[in-house]
Length: 84
Image 1 (cartoon, rainbow, N blue to C red):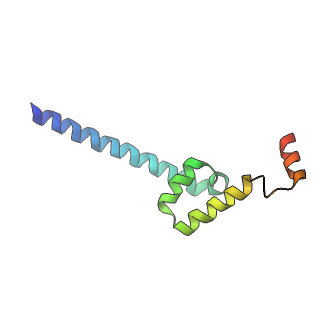
Image 2 (image 1 turned 90 degrees about the vertical axis):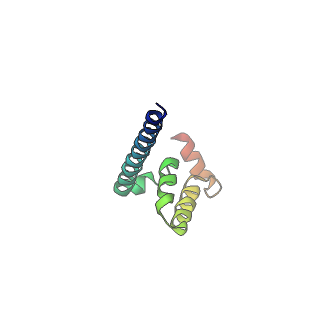
Image 3 (image 1 turned 120 degrees about the horizontal axis):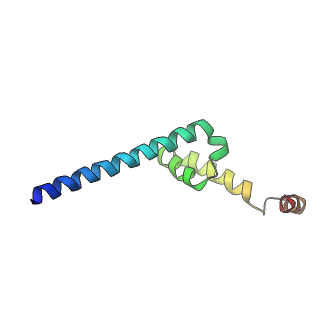
């Protein structure tokens, strides 16, 4: 009886790992096709950082911070963004 439960948990664990792997592969395919539009999305930043070098991840993060940082923008650019 207990062997059945052990086998059930093993099958469930393998199934969950398989689903997680498919999700990872789907995200990597989306990232590969449309990285310029998605590189500042936190979910895709996390997924990409698993496969990228630390230098690439850091450069992408700095690009996103500079893109959305109000410190690096002039007051006129901030006003224009608020109007949109």
